Amino acid sequence: MSSAQIKDAISKMESDEGYFTYGSIVWDALSPVQREVLKQLLFQGPIGDGSIVSKSARDDLMDYGLAARCCFMGEQGYACATYIAYSVFKQGGGAPIAKKSGVRD
Image (cartoon, rainbow, N blue to C red):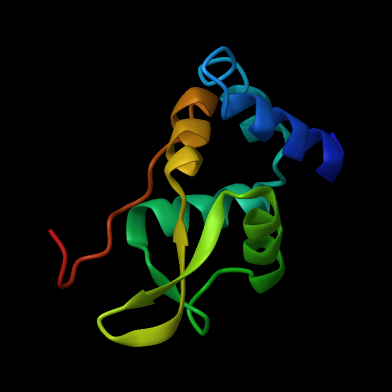
């Protein structure tokens, strides 16, 4: 599936009709490293630029609307998962990774 097809599927998820239909399609279309970064953002994020598994995969996820730049504890330089990214993960049947221990519970 091409980048344009992924973006099209995500845009369909943003409608009431497609929200619960296209997430698994998007998940299946992501590369293994994009899935790993998405899980890192979902379960250990926000993630600083120096700690992200793959900056290019993060950039792809940002382009698709599954990740965004954010501030964390008064600092810039972090990425986080978007709301729709969780739905893509859940609908795709992804296996969670360990949550990061730290300031958030």
